[in-house]
Image (tube, rainbow, N blue to C red; front, side, top):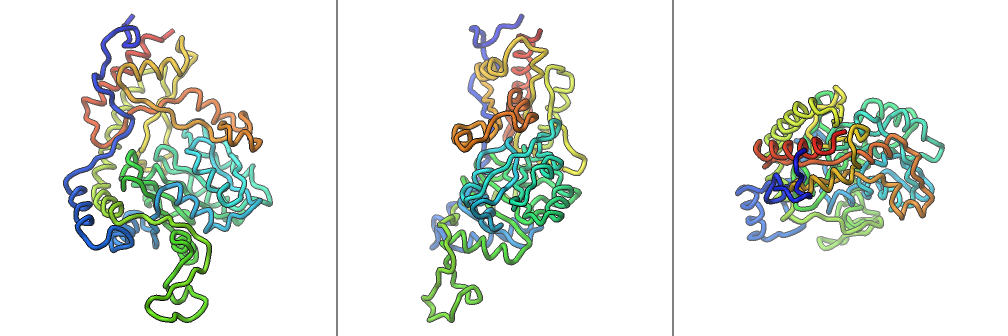
Length: 397
């Protein structure tokens, strides 16, 4: 039996490899330095430039850059008209912001279960959870795979619901040949450093709807505007502006926007590398019966943000925790995405309980996220696989 690092053996990685990591090149650095030397660190021309690039990438009519992905979801919920008592259906297998955005507006998150093979929200359970209080659906492209957009669009149209696609994981993904970002009523993106493209922090909402766009722009900047057609009366002069709504300071800086714009120039190569790494993982793990990997729908041409293995624990003489700790000891910086949102104490105090989404609960008990990022080499990946096989061999029944 192989000796694990936790039992005193030599770890596979001498220096730990993380599950995700940004890639910054000289072009990115020049873009940021140029802004630092310019007249505008914020509220300047780089915002428009990056928004235009995001429209090109997604095919959307409008893009609104915003402080971070959570702020983007808050803005989308606001623009959708979520108000106290309104229900918003989402998945529990997501970062809590996908549900919290409803709470920020006084709404009520309602959790629909997942498809146990794709890990994405189950459209049939969305429809089962609809009531006369339902106002919107926040469907999350978990790990980067597009949700069943056509089916969810059909459900939303049938019940007069706003369709918000949480694409924090899926920049670059296409659904039936069309880019994510142009297919829902609003689509939210995140540019955290572990995502496919980064702005350091930052987020965006894309939409084809002029009215939603206006609401998003106002929400981002305190509800303040200098746009005459958005004002209640004529301008008094070049200094003049009006607050016409209650918004927030959710602006992105030009520093961040310049970095994002440079990163978007590399989206194609980022996407191709991530797809290559996923293909290599899939091929290797097909021969490891103790593991199950995420299935993909044929409509999704996926750029994966996360790669998740699911442990077939009935074939192992250990818990998920023991595998997780063993991989950490081997220098593999694994993680778990995600703890079901309703499992947290805050949600439990609101009356949510485990067991309401059985597929999600079962998945959570078995999953581990393993390294996947653009600058990961084939050698890095081979060592990750070596560590996983080493741990699985040790704990195999």
